[in-house]
Image (cartoon, rainbow, N blue to C red; front, side, top):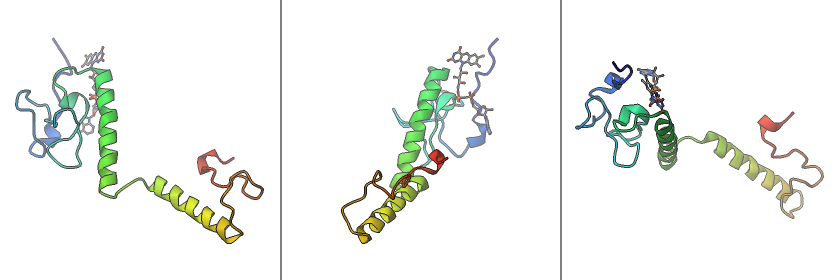
Length: 122
Ligand SMILES: Cc1cc2nc3c(=O)[nH]c(=O)nc-3n(C[C@H](O)[C@H](O)[C@H](O)COP(=O)(O)OP(=O)(O)OC[C@H]3O[C@@H](n4cnc5c(N)ncnc54)[C@H](O)[C@@H]3O)c2cc1C
């Protein structure tokens, strides 16, 4: 007897394309985690009828996260944190230029702690 060997994929039945050779498994474009719907990525047992291991699922999860991130970037969506940091840095550069130029130096007097990430602030 084997338990846990049926992919729980009913939730996307009729929405995503399934693997023609392996019932219940999602189809992904060869070597990627891309599904038949743009912006939807599949990883792990739901799209892997061959290995079905924790480590391969974790690896596919990392791949799916990267592909999702790239997809969002191409669409001009997401990564608000990076946008925020870039605009903060731009503001700091502008301030220094107005105060006399010479370029921004995080270690010079008056800049102590400037640019430090909030999570690192005590
Ligand atoms: C009995 C058994 C023994 C195993 N032994 C090993 C082993 O020794 N070594 C090894 O590497 N691998 C082993 N595996 C395989 C390993 O467990 C899987 O490959 C791995 O867990 C797959 O990870 P996953 O994230 O794709 O899926 P899962 O770990 O199954 O995670 C899917 C998650 O999605 C949730 N979920 C499902 N439907 C929905 C829904 N509609 N809405 C929200 N959440 C939902 C589930 O509750 C679950 O938490 C074993 C598997 C079984 C069944």
